[in-house]
Image (tube, rainbow, N blue to C red; front, side, top):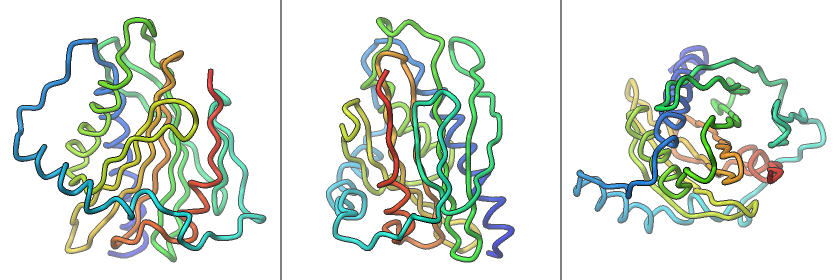
Amino acid sequence: MTPKKFKNYTLLLLTLATFQLSLMACGDKEPATNTDNTSTETTATSTNAGQSTAEDPSTSATAETNNWVDFTTENKAISIKFPGPPETQEQTAPTNTGEVQFSMTTYADESSKQFFMVSSVDYPVNPDEYDVEQGLEGAKNGAAQNSGSTIVSDEASDRFGIPGKKLVMNKTEQGETLTIRAELYIDPKGPTLHQIMIVVQGDDVNTPEANAFFDSAQITKL
């Protein structure tokens, strides 16, 4: 896959995943159900097998970020460093409470075929009527389903003092493996969904640049 095709396809992949995240995380408080027993068993097995891939960047090399670009989301919730000047696109996602507008900020390193993304979206729903755990589960399953990816690793995280997940997903496109590493957090007081993602060609989601990107992230609680 050429760098241009990789960039265009990755942007589409992240857009699809982000749209579905917004849709699935706006649920009611009914218990989540899973009608696909095979999928559940596969995910549970993959979680154990992929734990070091998603969770242990501290044992991997981290890139120097002195020359990286500082970025803060429009709602001031996430600050992070990008390897180069990022681009921000406005997106609209359908939800069961109406359309939600949000920004998706990306940077494509075409030489190393790594794609970086961050977004933060506030939901137009009463926090008291929102189930965060169901929202995170729906976000995970929706992102994988809508982007056509397989969940390799799924771990709970409270890194910023709010509920979250660390995920690794992959898919094959045009004979190439694309792997997504993601951290998803929902601040219950918003509720606000925060997303930090990279896509790489291949399966190495612990590159020095990827580790530095995730390590640089800070989320301000509401």
